[in-house]
Each structure stands twice: as C-alpha cells, then as structure tokens.
Amino acid sequence: MLKIDNLQVDLGVDAGLVRAIDGLRLSIERGETFALVGESGCGKSMTALALMRLLPENGWVAGGDIHIGQGRDAVDVLGLPESQMRGVRGGRIGMIFQEPATSLNPVMKIGRQIVEAIEAHTPLRGAAARAKAIDWLARAGIPEPERRIDEYPFRMSGGQKQRVMIAIALSAEPDFLIADEPTTALDVTIQAQILDLLRDLQREQRMGMLLITHDLAVVSGMAHRVALMYAGQIIEVAPADEFFAAPRHPYARALLRALPGTHRRDSPLEAIAGTVPALTQAFTGCRFAPRCGQAMAVCAGTVPALESVSPRHDVRCLLYSGGARPAAPVHVPAGSATACAPRGERPAGPLLDVQGLRVRFPIRGGLMQRVKGHFDAVDGVSFQVGHGETLALVGESGCGKTTTGKAIVQLLRRQAAIEGRALLQGRDLFEMQGTELLAARRQVQIIFQDPFASLNPHMRVSDILDEGLAALQPDLTGADRLARIERLTDQVGLRRDALGRYPHEFSGGQRQRIAIARALAVQPQLIICDEPTSALDVSVQAQILNLLRELQRELGVSLLFITHNIGVVEYIADRVAVMRAGRIEEQGACEDVLERPTREYTRTLLAAVPRLQVA
Ligand code: SF4
Image (cartoon, rainbow, N blue to C red; front, top):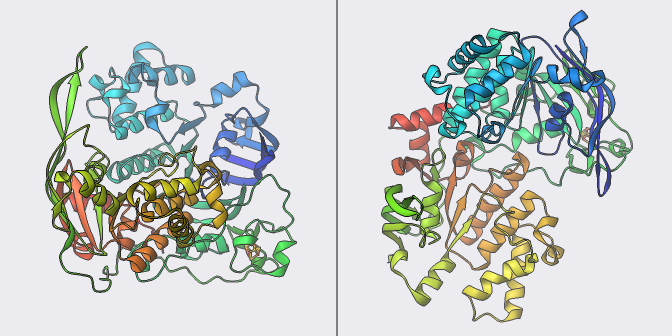
C-alpha cells in the first residue's frame, strides 16, 4: 500500500541545515499496522508530515520517493501537483492527530465537518452524505449519532472528539491511515476504547496503518511490524513479537530496560546516558556510538547500514554486520507479576495526614460574573503519607488529583473554598499563619509536569535555586546559600556551569532536574510530584525516577506522586490511592491495590493500561 524509498527531509534552522530524516526506507502492506517508534525529535512525525506533504515552512524533501497503492492505481506522492495532492490527502490517505481538540473546527458542527470530508472525496452529496456521516459516527462509537451530528465539538469529551476525528479520517474510506500519537492526550480507559475501535475498523476496511507513537506498550498490542527510529534513521525494523522478545540494536534493548514497573523495583532503572546528537552535523560513524554500552573502536569511523539479521528483521549496527549474531532476549514481564516489595524501616506515624479535604470552586456566569453555584473538585478526601514513603495518587484526568496536591501546598487559597485538615506532623497547614506558614512552606514543595512553564525564563539557574532559599531561609549567608546550591547541582546530576545558564538552554529532562533541585533547595520533608515525568521520553523518565528514588534514600523525603502511569506507580510507590470524581475509591499497599483491587473502578482502570505483550 505504501512504499517509501530513501526519503531525505531537510529543515533550515538558525544553526544551519538539519537533516531530520536521512535515507528512510519502509513499505506497508494492505491490512498491516506498521508502528514507527522512537523518542521525541527522532523524525517519526516528520515522516508523517512528509507523507502528507504538510512539512513546516522551513522544511523540504531533499530526495527519495513515496508511492501509494499498486499497479495502475499507484500514485507518486512527491510528484503530484498540489491540486491532485488535495484529493490524496484525506482521500487515499487519512490522518488522525494527537490532539483532537485542536484538530476539529470549534465553530462548525461535527456533522458538517464529516460531510465536508465525504463530499470532497466521494460522489455522495447532500442527504446521502449526511446519512453516511451518521453511519460513520455510529461506527466510531458515538451514541445517538442522529442527534449528536448537529452538535459543536465543545459539547463532546476528549474521547468523543477523537472518535469524531476517526470518523472524519475514515469517512472517505482511505487506503491508508496515519495515526500520529492518536491516544497520547487521552486517559487510559478512553485510550483502550479508541485503540479497540481503530483495530476493528482497520480490520473491516483492510487499510494499511502507520501508527506513530512513543508508547511501546501500545505498539505491542497493535502493530504487526515495528520500526525504531533514532536521529532521523530507522535503526531496527522487525515483526512486533520478534522486536519485543529479542530486540537486537543496543538502543532498542536499552529502551526496553528503561521502562519502569514492579520487575525493576529493587534496582535503579537503566537510563541511557547522553542525548540524541544534533542533526546539523555530517556523521562519520554510528549516531548512537557516544551513548552505546557496546560501542567498539570501529563504530566511531564506520557508518552502519541497515542489514538483515533474519528474514524481515533488519538492524543498523556493526555488531551484526558480516553475519547475524543472536541477541539474548531483554526480560520485560508482560504484567505486574512480582509483588511490590516494602523498602526499609521508617519513623512511625504519618508525616502528612489529610482528613476530609474538600476543594470547592465557584461557578460564575452572566455579565457580572456572579457566583451561580459551586463545583466540588475534591470531595472529602483522606489519606496519609508516612516518613520517607511514596504515596501514588492515581486516576483519570479531572478526577481531582492535581487539585488535591495544589490545595495542600496552598496554591488555591484565593480561587477555591477549602475545607478539611492537612496535618503536617500534627499541625494543620490550613490554619497556619505568618512565620509558622513560612516554615511549613519550606517543608512541603511541589514539582510540576511541565518543567519549562514552572521555571522563570528570565532567571539564571543559580537565581532560580537561590530565590526559594533566600525567601524561606533568610538566616543563611550568601556563601552558605551558594555552597548549598552547588551541592544540589551535583546531587541532581547537573554540571556546575549550568548555574550561569537560562532554562531555555536545557533539555526537558535537565529542566526537570532544575525543578527538582529547586524543590530540594529548602530541604523539604515532603515533595508533591505532579506528573513529573509524563512529558519526558522513556530514557529521560528513567533518569528522573532514579534520581527521585536516590534522593529519597539519601535524604528521607516523602513523596506524594501524582500520576496516571501505572508502570511508574509500580516502580516507585509504597502505597497507592485511586481517585475518581473527587473521591478516593480505594487505597492501600501497592501490591494490594494493583494485584488484588477490591473496587470495580480500579479493576477497569488497571485492565485498560496497555502492557508490553512479550512472546
Ligand atoms: Fe553501538 Fe557500534 Fe552498534 Fe552503533 S554500531 S549501536 S556504537 S555497537
């Protein structure tokens, strides 16, 4: 259905010419799901954009061919005039993007948006096109499609919007579908439904599908074949079961070992040192060599080619050139088979005791924005966090986990009415004033999901780290503060010269290290970590989780870890509390909740989590 041959895509940037895709070759058959995986910036989304001829303004195809279809039906995508390409885009190739909210037109009824696609790419018009749109909404799992076809996107949930996107993409019955991170923005239960739907529709339509994602567990449940990209090139391509059972390339093996879960709980995750190389350079050796644990002298001076190690399994690595060498399987258990192990002795009694926490936001309306009612985002939540313990707060988006964290660190005092108690070593945080409150603020710190948004872009790292110290520990001299800041940069694994730089000069993982250093600067007893790794790649996530566990062991800090990633919970948490609609459904020791859940909701949530399916 699709054949890409030696594709090269260049981007013009300030630093020069970036070769974003370098010699990409792949072919996808009818009815096949082919997954393109890799960490951010490796070129997977750029491949999809090149396929649709939707490259950014500073990008162009510098070489190669893309063909869709076979025989007389075959189309040379790169050679078509733009007027004909419009028929291919959305007609023969459908596309689903990551963020359904921004992909739909907010001022157009959903029915109109589907009918537009049908009329542009099929002979159906008017009432027939509308009937077809209703049919597609029903097939995409939208309830009452006859009524809902006349609704605007804002009336739909995230999952429903993604279903509408799928209906639009498939309504022209394309030969081929590109799904670019189609479920990344969705909760796990909705993700499971959307993936099931895509699988069923693909089987029915016999489409070829290019699935682009960074989530290896999703790939293992969906794909027939997998290609792993690194620095603009495919470095391994294999049938999915073979790839997950015995990956060959050192990078593929390292990625699988970096995944968190119970099976890794008693040891640090194997993080991949270093970063992806800049693509502005001409490579004279293997692109992965500076990070490769198996690099040989020859790797620095020889560019490896993509070579077959077995039928349908190709690897770009000099370890395998001149004769296939078998690789030992990477052991990645499919489920949470091992019980979560307790870690070490800790002082008795809770450090934080939250009792009946209720956070009530006003609902405003009308010209004067008067209060018309209230909404309980958190509705009577109670839990405890022990000394040196990690409590994971899990649940789907909007369940109140972040609001709970923000309420404890007093970030919602002005916006919401807060009831209940949050006792820090027996003293109620919500009743504290003046110096007592200042001291308590020092003891409870928060790390946010997006490290970039939470760091002041106009301040140097040294000032960012010094700001909290100066405010919360005014008794320290400038020299004491500098000494502590330097120690902190060592602790979180940043170089000392980072202190003189600004946040934009760092990668996402480094910025999260700065945020962790800022939280640690005032020597807190409790850190609330709000999805600290969800914006990061697997290898960087491993570094941050290792760092948090190390710091916990060294300094004895307690963590309230807010996340929706069950693999992370299995790896880091001692206890788990499951939240739903502002309440705690179930809480207990990690192994009890995850292995023997008592509530139906917990069971549904855990069943929806994609797991690596290893043969
Ligand atoms: Fe590692 Fe060498 Fe293989 Fe590159 S070619 S992945 S450096 S062993």
